Image (tube, rainbow, N blue to C red; front, side, top):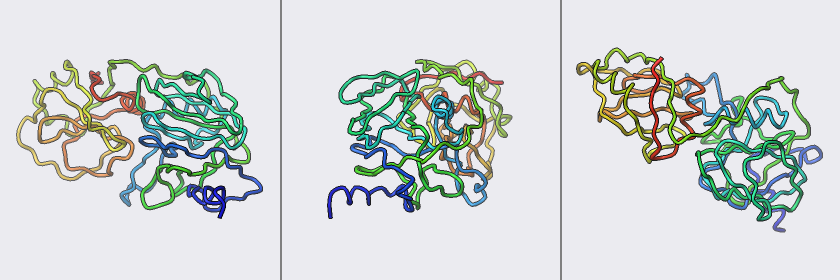
Length: 305
């Protein structure tokens, strides 16, 4: 069997491709730390224990689709860190945003662009450096072709929707879906220190009054324990007014739980659907995206609404 045939078989992100309409557009040379398809998420299945998932930085995800003229729900490639390298198999228009990164095309450096870039078959695109942020979003026009599971193309364990592997083939759609008219988004700036807007959670009233002041006036640092499931924070210990037992309850992306150690963890896109720790604060969508781009060791403060 030829090498080309083997590589095509590696394209497990698409099982029923109509070759007359779809084109292989990228071949994965190096998948990097984490690389997978993400869209806005998977909704309506939390009662089955299925998390929402979706793009960690939703603002950057939407911005990329806007710049490409794609539908708001078009799947993008989400890349964590650097080292991601692909071979271009078909002439295509691309755009990326999110982390402040350096991408090389055939060895020539290109910083985050302000408009889509045309790539030619045979070129090599490599994400060689990230100066700020964690997550980069790469899209193409008219979009990627991928089978959905439960109404979403976001990575999901137990299906073909998994992280990319070396030699995987990525396919291009035949044509644009109808654009829903979203516009006016701007690429949100990444800062060394940001203030995150938070709302009171269901168990906020359990906190000691002096510790509420700690939350408002202290800086918290992002620990090394970060993933698509959650970001653990380091800072002053926070305690409850008295020993309270928290029954297992619903949690969402952006829920901030207070751990027995007195530290906090912010649940992110692939968090579980229920949890047993007090839910003291809640982030909105904008704040989740801002926090997602914070690196280990960087600091945040909270603005309690």
